[in-house]
Amino acid sequence: MTPSKKGSKPRPDKSQPLLRQLAAVPEVLFAGAFRQQYGAICFRHGTAGSELEILVITSRENARWVIPKGWPMKGKKPFEAAAIEAWEEAGVRGVVKKKPVGRYTYLKELDNGDVAPCIVDMFQIEVTEISGDFKERGQRILEWVSPDEAARRVREIELKSLLVQFEARGRKKRDRG
Image (cartoon, rainbow, N blue to C red):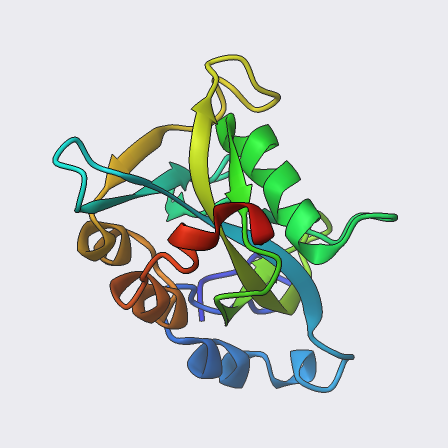
């Protein structure tokens, strides 16, 4: 557990895998269901054409490496919410697969200081447009890296695995989703 102020709730050490984090604050396990989020594995083909590059961005709070993700949006399907997050957080748009390519879990520290276990369904986006003018511009650093390097940079073990094993799906059926 990380140090906390006198009288405040203990906080999990975020460098630990999810189960160890939860073990440090067992009340989180029984406080309610996991919360749902949607994320995007944004990728493009490198200059040589064959190698993949994956977009990683920094979080706004503590500048750690993450992928675009966010909460469900009223009236939007999960893959649409992932695409909106990619645009707002990183200024990228592209061809979005409608079915998730995987999922991972992590602990989200909420604005009120509470910790919520989250499940993030991941959708692939083959990036076709990059803009320098987007909602969270100036609040994040963006970098295109190899899948292995993306996995090295993120903290969540399950996300690392998704990134290392990532293969673009449906390239020949681009418009069908």
